[in-house]
Length: 236
Image (cartoon, rainbow, N blue to C red; front, side, top):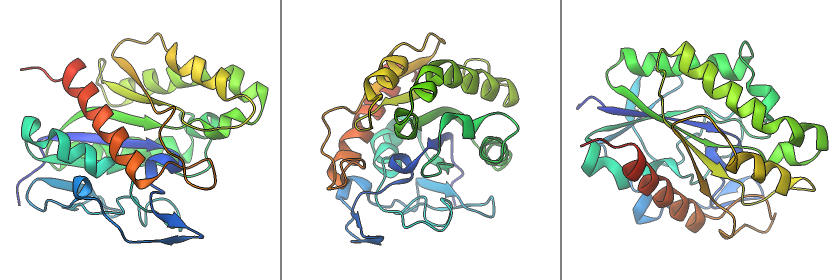
């Protein structure tokens, strides 16, 4: 098995762990061609911290006991693999989480660091973090007010703990949320830390719950993130 050359950390909440095709806690099993498995070039770090061939749903068994569907990770990997070689995906997202749940020292943050380090130890270079989170922070004004500072703190902590001072981050601008959606989106687009790019998901199709994006939208978002990665971070 070819070892991953570039490793991408997938983190955030349910839209990153993938709800494409999930209705009433059942996944429809439909995998678009853009999200097809490639057992020779795309791998995921499983719950046992070992590489295995990646396939949808990428986060199944890693996002608690929730039902996961199509997310952006595999379509992203398919879009960049010809440029970067074998891709390692490290699923770390957790549904329903706020920024404060990702604070250094907390379970989610420490699990992400542990999994990222395990990915490095098993071959491959951490290339970027793909971060899609924030819907839960649109419920209350105090959470929305702190959002930008908390994201910047997360990025700086992660770079320090992984000893990657310039680690690229592709952050998704929210497609959905509640009362303070605009405030969180404004914070996302205003992150001042270097090597952070915001890809805007606003306008992508939503499922009936008006919270989770559709399977089609996950593919569109993945291609937007891949284009952003190639344009901003991929050195020749």
